[in-house]
Length: 436
Ligand code: GLC
Image (tube, rainbow, N blue to C red; front, side):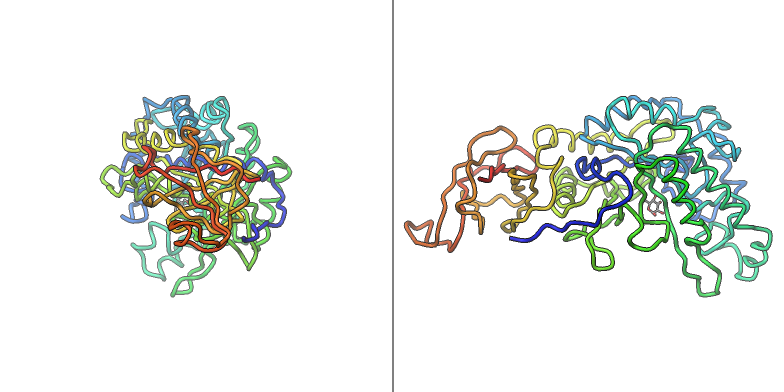
């Protein structure tokens, strides 16, 4: 038996977050038209004038946020996080502080307001992603990840930065965060992205907490929305963020920072891009998708799974299939996810445990023949069943005394489940063990 880690208390309201476990990330912006990654402006070092085309043609005529919200709810997601502004600088919301926003494109609308309303109406919590990085703002100093950097010598960068004043950008950032936390109702979560304080090889600075004035920003946010959760990308000391956000990475155990367990959420993509990418083909299988969710909850974290809508305002058919894989599975297995966390028990090989009080959930990744032996559980289980159909799973307990051929094969404090030869028709079958 292991002790389940207990992170130190945080400022924001973490209760709903650790209960809900599963959210939808949405990356949407004018890069959806390029359809070749949300970093396209950087990757191809596209100048503002050329990138403007995507703004001029941004017209998501099929956008129906109620449809998105319904799909998210049906996929079993309990909250969502939308890119109100990504690194390209384009704002999906009607900000007073810029013209570079959806209301000035052919779509002529604030896209965030109806989205927040629609997701709330489906019972999901609202989260905003806001890019600290801004490749459009004229006062954002050029640095190693700025699209123009690749087209300039270090001296040219230094020269160009003389007319860029980061304090003007900082004010813009604070003003926009204030708008987002004032004009759109309850915001449960703010996901900032991201800091990179180290200088490059030429001594050209990156950006971090001083550039953003992170402390002041956080103080303002806690005042505007006291319950809000704030993530870990503001370059603040490790004990400041409410939620830590390892990205595109599956931790093996409970995530720790500075040697202490933290509240955490991993964000992941269905394929290899956050923004809509027409030609990217590494779409994960239903089995991988479900296992990612289970792996995450079994190590005490949340999963924020990303959809990159098209420039028409729709979810791609591949994203819909992936969402359906989650929805179908969670509809019958949700009990092993919501309200669950890491278990105090060690799972057998090829399996994962999640636990919620006396409910212990065994997720079987590799289907063995007839018997599943679990160490340390003899005498502790009152009843066992498959979660998908509540059919009894019979078991035997061994105190180490060999009574039969089966018992001779195992030792100690073992509980052996008697499982069918054929794996049930469920992507990842779950055995629900009712602890005494
Ligand atoms: C990275 C990328 C970005 C994406 C984010 C999601 O920081 O820069 O494109 O939005 O990860 O966490």
